[in-house]
Length: 273
Image 1 (cartoon, rainbow, N blue to C red):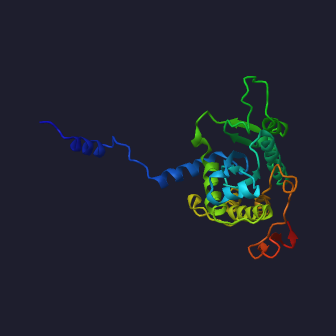
Image 2 (cartoon, one colour; image 1 turned 180 degrees about the vertical axis):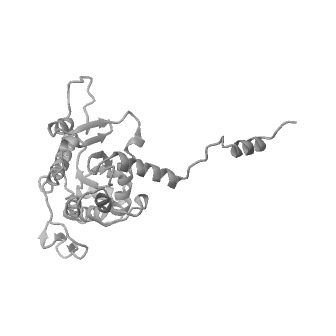
């Protein structure tokens, strides 16, 4: 008598010969546990760029108001801490400015840069793709000069940058597509406010509704250091007026930024931009 495929499958399942398929939540939980077991906070960053020309309202700001087109982002794999900066051009020089700014921030937190690993794709804004293997891009030189390590993902291995790619989508849907920018000052100021909210206050369902700040504290980082890690200014890397800004960010949710609608200037605790 010939057994049907359903009967064979039933017998295999009863004998434990079929591995049950894991749910998406179960896979996410396993991946989160693996990251927590293998990475230290603020030690492993995925760095990438986003072309903002595909954002419906923001593209109008690019062409008519001269807003920066590119967004550089660095995401800490362990805690989810996010650091961003805008740029008019996607170049290795701007990549160098961004990573240098990130390293300066990490040093202010007392981090040992020799323990930091930076992962990028093979874009020309990060690595030199010349046949001459002895040449280094300014981004690579900056990483080496700070004694950090650089890791390039294999060609077309896009999933290796999934953490920072996910952040690219979040900042698009929660900020760039929502706000209506009147000036570059608003762009810089409101982006800084949103990023502080993302790092300090915004719960993440993928991380059991914990913020990056809470995850840093759970990893053994002191509250003061974790708070200072959230104090990051979103700048425009290749704009002399906006590349060296440092805001005094709010120390609690009771201190909020305000927009002077009469003068169209962004004010943060009395400081006009």
